Length: 87
Image (cartoon, one colour):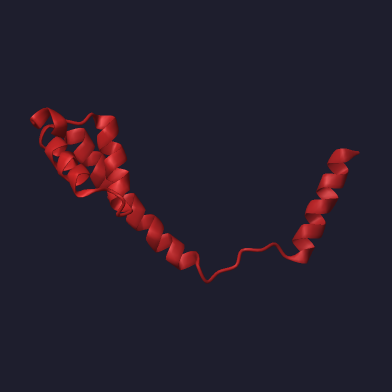
């Protein structure tokens, strides 16, 4: 029975990624937590991955209202540079 609950580190990282997006099943989460008992590296991966996801979510909320576009003057200058390169 316990052999069915044993997973590799590759499977653990996949389940970790799924669980962050609420796509992992209960059985997958149980397998992941059992894997954490013996694997400090996967535990650290999950912790770091969660922090990075949180930071990216915060940054995306900061950028949501902003529009990053080039001005017409910048576009014209870039066109001139391309034309000079083609010559």
